[in-house]
Every structure is written in C-alpha cells, then in structure tokens.
Length: 151
Image 1 (cartoon, rainbow, N blue to C red):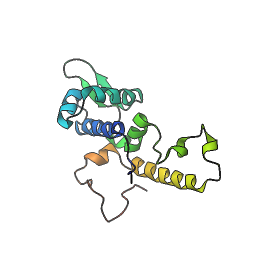
Image 2 (spheres, rainbow, N blue to C red):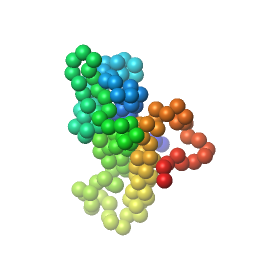
Image 3 (spheres, rainbow, N blue to C red):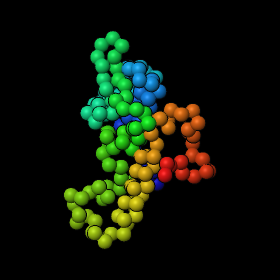
Image 4 (cartoon, rainbow, N blue to C red):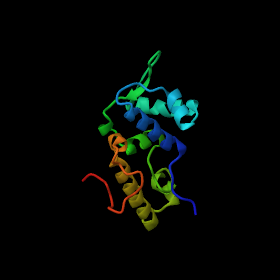
C-alpha cells in the first residue's frame, strides 16, 4: 500500500519557512539552511522562488543577506506554504482533474469521498501557523487529545 504524501518540494518549503520563522526577523542564508538539513542549496533556491513571488518571504543580497519572512509567523499557515509550492493538495488526481470530466462522472461517489479527504487535509494544514511550529509546546507527534485546530 502506498501512503499519501506530499512531495519533497512541499516538505522542504515548510522546513525553510520554519527556519526563517525561528530566526525571528533576521535574515537566514539558504546555504546555512541547506547545510543544517543536508539539502541541496540549488533545490532550496527553486523552492524559495514561488514563496518570494507569493509574498511569503523577502530576500536581500550581499553580506548579511538571505531570506526572512515577509509577514508575521502567526499569519502564515502550513497550508499556504504547501499550496504555494505544490498547488492544491488532493489525495487523488481526479479531485483536481476538472480538465477531463469523462474520467470521473459527476455522480461518482468515490470522488466525493476524496474531496472530503482533501478538505480535511486542507483544514489541518490551514490550522497550523509557523508561529505554532516554533512554539516549544507544539507536539512533534499526534496526541490522543484529538484535533489541535483553532475553531
């Protein structure tokens, strides 16, 4: 069985944004982030480009330069980051495949299930901000207390 997962692009985008949030307004170089996480600096540069274009990060060249968050960490959700670099998060292609409706008829009940799953994923991703991630009490593993979403 193949688990549902995001691409490395989405995963690394969240890591980069997490590091920028931890820097608290200081500029961080992609070289330092790539060294710390053992990731390709070139790949991180490709990931940062759409984040910059979407107004989530700001860049500065030269000595002391790098990247910083363009908005407060409490205003940027994990969902916004992932959708910026990956597009819509869908568990199966037919949910996003409006170009070929013949592949899945309008009354397809399975498609309705996957749409609900996609909405649930979006809800969870949109309920977590970068500020939440850098909080010391943010759990690194799921708890038995249930959903941490904000109502």
